[in-house]
Length: 279
Image (cartoon, rainbow, N blue to C red):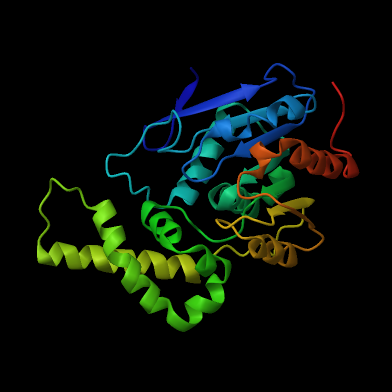
């Protein structure tokens, strides 16, 4: 199996499809939090006709190494570093395209593009947004929220954020504290402050994608209650000249559940921008 060691000497699993076809443009696929590169299984047969494909499992996901503490601090920024390491290893020095799924995959794609605009030829965001769910605390918090709250999160958070945090905090604390280790009262308070800080920062410091100017496709799903379609709409409004599609009657994993429809939307976008070329 192909692995490389990242900046923290952790083993990162990756795959390259059509590695020998240097005449093909390159596309990088980035999975969501809690997922793996296998999420794109139904896109690979279609994409490999046109691209060299690079996929990898982020730290703590799939076949890559996991940190002992498993809190995955600053996972978006660290994954961007890992991706650059992989691109250097593979000697990718020309422009490439991005496809990111879910909030984590889309934020990694957006963050890399903002830092390296000269390297990215196009961007495809599937069921994503700019909310940074990049560690365990933030993901537990988001998953604890009921569907209605996630669908109207910004409005509700402005009114009663402290109440939401207070109600979810004990569940998050229980999830991240090892049962076999006794925690003192002072340590518990430190953990509570850490949880509150992570959630507040998640809300206050989302990505600003307004500087992205490469061709950009944004695909949301009508029934997505993890990354609600309003996030795709907001992303579309923030990225000038981006293209938006909201897929009807599907949810967060539409790219695998109704892959033909997603693939058709992706192909139309690539063809419009003359990116596809049969090989």
